[in-house]
Image 1 (cartoon, helix red, strand yellow):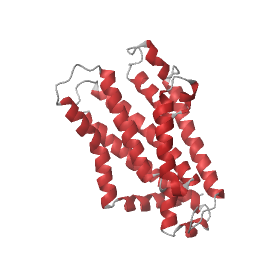
Image 2 (cartoon, rainbow, N blue to C red):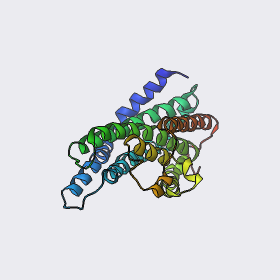
Image 3 (tube, helix red, strand yellow):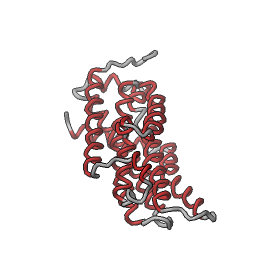
Image 4 (cartoon, rainbow, N blue to C red):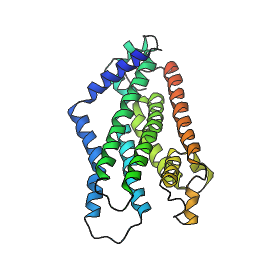
Amino acid sequence: MNAESVWAVFRFEWRRSLSGFRIVAWLVLALFTPILILLVQSRPLDPVSEYVMGSVIFVLVVEVTCLLGLLLWGAPLIQAELESNSWIYLAVRPYGRVHLLLGKYANATTWVFLAAVTAISITSRFVWMVETERLWVVIVALSLLSSLAYGALYVLIAVVFPKKAMVFAVLYTLIFEGLVSLVPATINRLTIQYRLRSLLFHWMDWYDKIPEDARILLSKAPPWQDVGILLGITVSLLAAAVVAIQFREYLTGGPD
């Protein structure tokens, strides 16, 4: 495997992403959170605790922005090559499949992470309910972990279900990251959102401020352990995607 080849794929995908539709989509992702928070704060609302507002910003940036961006850049990884008839040329090159996967993964996570950083950077300039400097650092760190972990997950889905990757990615996100992560049982610990949410409350020192009954939805482990688990999930999913793409055969025409 050649790092230069991965870098070449990244540069090519980066230039290809500089299209009208992708730029508009990126701007929508980057501006969605600040516009929504600005509209909310411009209205006379009852006092809201800082962890409630911080949680809203967390969901909008770390979850909505990152997930929607990765659905756009990561999920169509294989399908785009099959539709452009370029897969056959990549498949016969030594480690060509792996270079493609890692290069596209790096491109997707970079674009999404930059959108998240832009969103929280603008939002933190005018939000008044939260300790903004700490929130900015925490949200940026969580956005990076979110982009890496969800990016690896969506890449694996794209490899296993190339022509229906978007459908399976959306279903997984709604069912597991949306519903299962909120179930007060052991199964919610298997979700990425559970770890990200726990890190938010620990790093912002909100864990002791919330009702004790609500803490069942958060991890009691130290933050370094949750970070390690997220990085472990990322590496494991990427490794599974690399192995799968090496042995998976794809049809360049007709149903998969």
